[in-house]
Length: 94
Image (cartoon, rainbow, N blue to C red; front, side):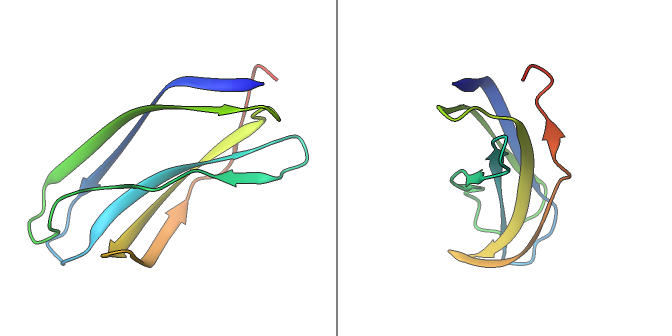
């Protein structure tokens, strides 16, 4: 089992475009099987820019966490609009 604790995630809303940002963790094991963790949505209305939100959380996987990626996206309500994902970062302890 591998655990990431603590894990801090943050998003900034930089546009007053009616959309809101969200962030999530993606982990993978030695076989590159991915676990896409739940989205953390910024709770602002999306009509003003300049806000941010931070989540202190953790991740635990019985199949071990060999690496991680972070995915950030724009949403319109619960509809995914677009996003991007970081390059994988390998676990230096595995």
